[in-house]
Image 1 (cartoon, rainbow, N blue to C red):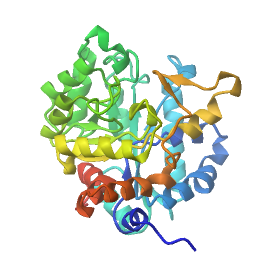
Image 2 (spheres, rainbow, N blue to C red):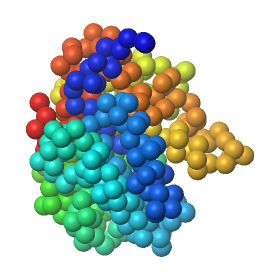
Image 3 (cartoon, rainbow, N blue to C red):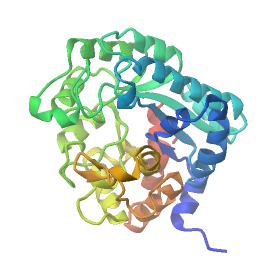
Length: 345
């Protein structure tokens, strides 16, 4: 039997949290009668193998459903999350606040937290954000790569656009609802605008450092400092294309994590893994591969980081780099749990 690594031991004893896993997209592709069992049989073992205690589940609507079907597909995904939790109540809990997260983790269950990614289901009907908050959504981002009714994504940086009037209204409403605003995918000027207006802590669920690797999806040092200044947190994206143009290794993950910690403070850094290889493998036909997304090959991975079971590799690499165990524990999950209002230390 192979001895456990330092990272595996750390993830086994501390709280592990991931701010971004698109597994709900794959759940919703199954017949509704299979939603709960597919999660239990396919995803729960992976999450447990990685030591995950808290998993954020983004509701992301594919292009095929936009614009007319975006709201319907979003509601299907939210319903899928509720059915997962109800049918697997011994394994997971869908959490609305820090008390729910604490209770779930204390009982040995995985805490699930819903997020909206991109808001195509909202358009300018900002009041629908309150509806989604009633359904359990605790994190919202305003756009994806392109343009939405609320803001521009980072692929539109050349436009230099800030939030729209509806985007400003959405920010104000979300803060009143104690729903976190997520700036991952938001364009540079849009992040500036959010940071100017923010009265509550701001979150980046899955972003890397632009200083370490120049890509529009990554955050500048100014933005990292600004997020930290709100009391917020930057969760490191583990997608290889945002880490380097070289052959990706765990050393690139460490470089981004350590730089974010140097700029923001290690207590302001978490993990937002963005494991996409399984998603694209199922959705993209072989004749269309490799899929090049924003200049990156989606099939190129950091070795071992193809799913949640690989998360201990990140902790192990950080420990081996000389980062103190207490800081690694924070990045592994305690920082994100604390941001979401749980009693993590």
